[in-house]
Image (cartoon, rainbow, N blue to C red; front, top):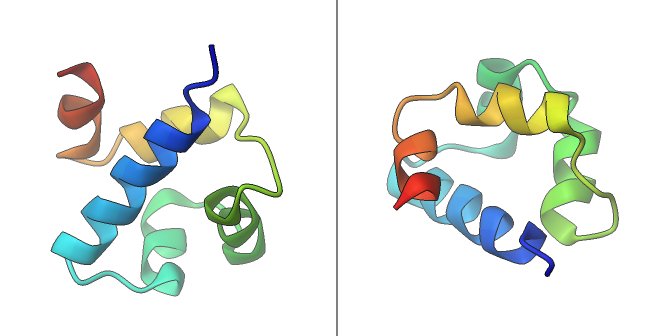
Length: 66
């Protein structure tokens, strides 16, 4: 079972709804902008640490748990 596309979709939707550019999302999460870009394109897998950094943002964790 591959959950990565679903997680990516939630992240992309959250970024659109919050009107966040990749650079700002990178600043918020502390994840390198190039790494985030590769994750969202699907060319790089997300580590557990990166997932924790992303889900520490209000709104994303709740959506993933629904």
